[in-house]
Image (cartoon, rainbow, N blue to C red; front, side):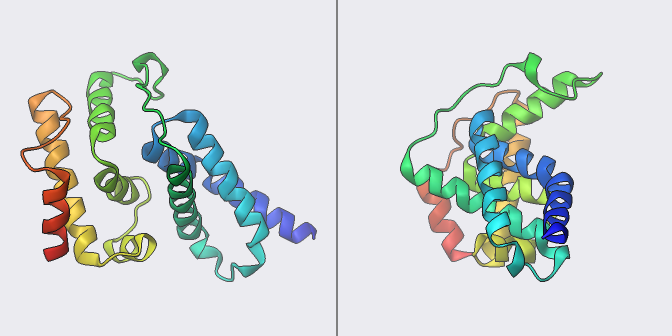
Length: 178
């Protein structure tokens, strides 16, 4: 039992920061992100013996965070909370740029924010994201492209966009064609 516990503790120590950042970018709420990570690790503890390849632990846990978020979202609509800029970590010389990027990223629809965060923070490839999100790679690539376009447009305009000229329904129709 000790080796199982040590293995689990090492996994928690190594991955909790990345999981929290991903969860926070999904839900935009600190308490909910903490709950998502906690529930993810609770599930990981229950199914730890099923993890045969330690190198896949990160991908497995990121997928679990996403699924836990989906379960939470099915139950209720999470409140959208604006984060105070004084509370943001990592404020340095280019703090206004970092704040603008964070706000623009949080203004993206979840389907775009999700793939962008998985790529930038998680470092996942298109194939890995497609497998984790259970969608075709072309859809992942399309969402990444649109996420970057929207983020660039928001940053260039200086205002977080609440919507582009296209509606979400139009985006979905075009993605299914991709």
